[in-house]
Amino acid sequence: MTTLLDPSTVTPAPPRRPDRYDGIWRRGRIIALLAALAAVTMLGPSLIPDRPGHLGSLVQTFLPWTGLAVPPLLVCAVVRRSATAAVALLLPAIVWCSLFGGRCTDKRAAGGDLTVVTHNVNEHNPHPARTARALAASGADVVALEELGDDTPVYERELAAGFPYHSVHGTVGLWSRYPVADARTVDIAPWPRALRATVRTPDGPVAVYVAHLSSVRFGVTSGFGTDARDAGARRLAAALGAEPLARTLVVGDFNGTTDDDALSVLTSRLRSAQDVAGKGFGLSWPASFPLARIDHILVRGLEPRSAWTLPATDSDHLPVAASLRLRGGP
Image (cartoon, rainbow, N blue to C red; front, side, top):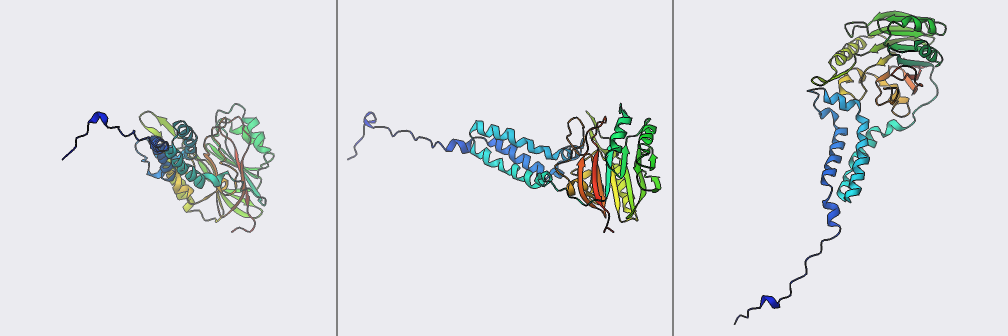
């Protein structure tokens, strides 16, 4: 015989109380997704398509700044009380430290015997004489200038006493305490923007290239325009490929960073003095609030001992310097 229970007499089971830890793992999935996207961007910037608009070059130019995504996402994770997001944020933090943490260390050392300074002086510099005097007082043995213009005679006059040898080709120039020979234009653009010369140091000849790659323009329809710059980099790389001297120095304003794959045809053949022997990122542009290092001292067959930025002049770029070891080299 079946006994029917009266529903009114049955006490319902109490509702299941959710575990208070369930929510912190369920919340914040969008934040975790953004954290993963930041890590992927750092690890594989070359995966970002360069067309249209050369977006890949734009991201690579400012790649170290992707780390700034972590602090605001961490704040969001705390506000959301999301353990998932907090754990996910460890990924971009670890990736950033592995990629860029080494640049924050101080790798400078003594022992250099050739000091080099390069500076985009800005053709609209309101005080070229003051800029030239600052460079003359830098202690450099070799000074390379880019974006020379109508004020070139001012630089020639102010630098003459300390640098008796010099050569100017178009908008770039080289000043040296040591004899300069075989100076010629390197064809990287429709007008002279690069030169090659031999500097005869007491420890032997060094091939010196001074280059100002074409400026990058941003347009609403064209995006981050790098075509002219990239073509100039390829031409400069071809000239380096034919360079007979083992000790080679390439300096100037590349309008791009060594993280930019579009410039790897040039930068992969050389070592950055800042990366090898600098402290921090050595950001050089814009001078008022530097965001990127687009001014470089690159070497082959030379040993960088230290690299640094100089105090601001009246240009929109900071001068950059490096001390190199010649003795004992090739």
